[in-house]
Amino acid sequence: MMKGNPLRGANYFLRGLAMLPEKGIRHFVIVPLLINIFLFTGAIWLLFEQMGYWIDYLLSSILPDWKWLDFLRYLLWPLVAGLVLVSVYYSFSVVANIIAAPFNGILSEKVEQRLRGVTITDSGWKEILALIPRTVAREIAKLLYYLPRLLFLLILTFIPVLGMVAPILLLLFGCWMMAIQYCDYPMDNNKVSFRAMKDSLKQRRLTSVGFGGLISFGMMIPLLNLLIMPAGVVGATIFWVEEYTDGSEIDLTAGSGRERLEHK
Image (cartoon, rainbow, N blue to C red):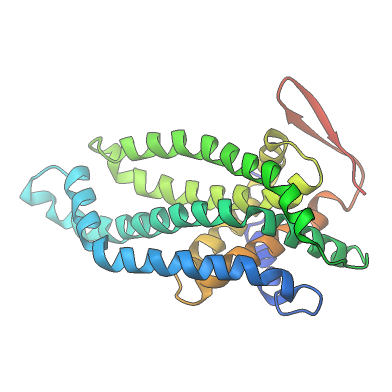
């Protein structure tokens, strides 16, 4: 049985979005915001140029060339269009997050300090540069988790009948990956391993999917998608503080043993 509340998860993102202009936080948002603006402008241009072709290609791959099945094209078109949108935007967000990873780590750290009532201190370039190896390694771990599963789901789109449910699975997987993408920043700051982070999100899978789902939806809205990265980082940090560090000790399975994450 899946636990959690998707509405609560979505609300974490909305709260992260509302927190961006707050004094003491907003100047840590600038670099992730500029990176997002640059790369998502490229994604929008690519979608305008290629989206129609990609949708037609995927529909022709999913459905046999039988005229009596033409009505299914109209039913599947919105799902396939959503698949293309999420795939393109997620691909661009992967690049953006690799570039912005150290800055996102700093942003998450400052937000956590704010939420805990700790005085927020400015970060110098030495602190940011010191984060690069660790944060980039985590981004690579996310890619290694994401790519094989994406490939499997894409292969399903070319299998008759199964191809009809593949767009739904891809959309759900995209929501899950968005939760992993952003919740990893506060958990990495708190020395939670990648495997333990995934297991902890599974314990609140519906909350996680609700959080990642609203991010995925927001990525398709012009102008709002430019704020997705910093809002996602801030929202994920709120998620971390309120869901994982507000009570007693919890157990997270990771690798061959058990990792204990002690609440602060």
